[in-house]
Amino acid sequence: MQFDLFPQLEPVLIDEGCDPDGPVCKDHEIDEVIKLNHKKVNLRIELAKHGERWMFSSAISTPDGGNSYRVGKKWGKFTNSREDAIYFASAAIRKSAKSHKVEKEVDALLSTIQGAPRFK
Image (cartoon, rainbow, N blue to C red; front, side, top):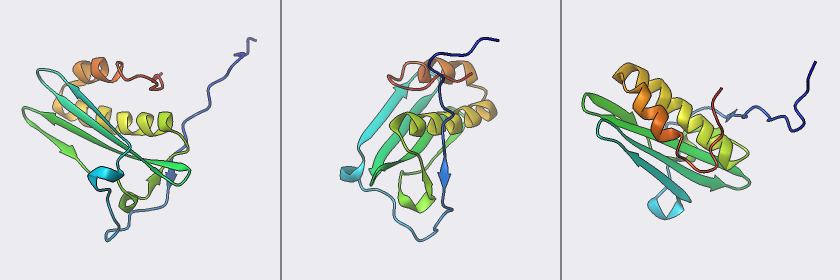
C-alpha cells in the first residue's frame, strides 16, 4: 500500500442555508473576479472574503442560454479557502456546462485558473 506524502484535503463547503432577503456584494466588496472567454462560452467567478471565510459565485453564458448569481452572504455558502471557493464555483459551472453541451470548452477554460484545485 502506498500513501501520499502530501495528501490533499477534500474541499469543504459550509452551507448555512439561503436567506432570501440577505445581501449580495457590491462591486467594491468583491475581492477577485475571474473571467474566462471562449468562442462558445463565457465564464465568471466572483470571490469575496467574509471574515476568515470565502464566498463565491459562478456564471456561465453560452449561445443557447446560461445562468448566474452574484456573490454574497445571501446564499449561505462559504469555504475556508480561496481554492475551495474556486473548486465549488467551478463545480457549479461544470454542472451547467453539461446541459449546454459545452463541457470540453469549460474544462479547458477552468484548467487555466492559477491556484485552482484539480478535479479528479
